[in-house]
Length: 384
Figure 1 (cartoon, rainbow, N blue to C red):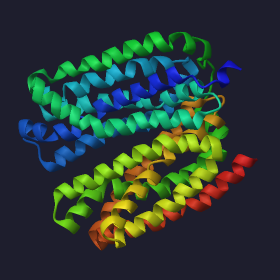
Figure 2 (spheres, helix red, strand yellow):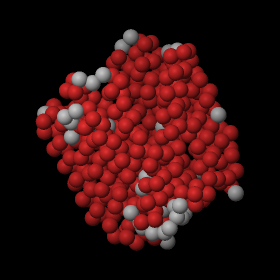
Figure 3 (cartoon, rainbow, N blue to C red):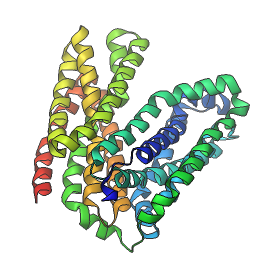
């Protein structure tokens, strides 16, 4: 059947659009020093900016339901890179803190509009190799987190803050390419049915509930390594450069994990791949905390590879089980992921303040091991 064929060109294009889209969402962090200086912001005000941008993620299930019922998955994916690029390319032009908040809030809405339906298109174009498709898709996003800040700094240096908005052009060209490349295929396969969030939840609750447990357990490892790694390494070595290098190494092997895990899950099975990465990741974190020298570096690389590699596998599971409401199902999954990640970052910070960063990593690893019972439950549900 045609829909079982892996459409390399379209999968690659949507994955590339993920890269382009997320490059723009990565602008805030590297440009924050310029924004703080221009608007005379406090650190508390600066910290609120990222939160405001993430708030629209709470709308993910409703966006997914809208996309399913109206058959608009393609249109949202086509328009979102440009809709995100517009506010993000003008953050250096914000005349006040409140204007900046509005720009980031609208960017957050567009981020949700892109990330909810795009895995649905990837699932369609991947046929039976959904894991491979999700790996390529997530690699686009992870790569953007690495290269986006460098692009933003280079653009400001070359164009100047006053003309930074010119970078919108890359997103516009991407939207045009998506429109002409995805149009015919999506017209044939768009979802146009009436549904509800309740119906979507009931369709996938057998996998969503155990996956939520896995997300909650993994979120502590994700938070401790992704947010506090540089601080931990800097305090141990006295070098901010080493802290940055450690994070770069972690992210680089994360890209490798994301790229390979989904494909491996196509061959070996979703549960088997999740079992190994969820078992290895906590052990690697514990060894990383207590080791030194080359062993510490190796454990950091293994941690990056395993902690970040679970997402494409879980996305594939969601799409394989969401036959009637794929976008709404992905919206529910992403909302839960956002919620548990936000809570985990807060709790990890509190643990770090009370018990120290080393103990925070240990607690995060122990919590990470609690994913295994949820994974076993997921395996039972998949077999049934």
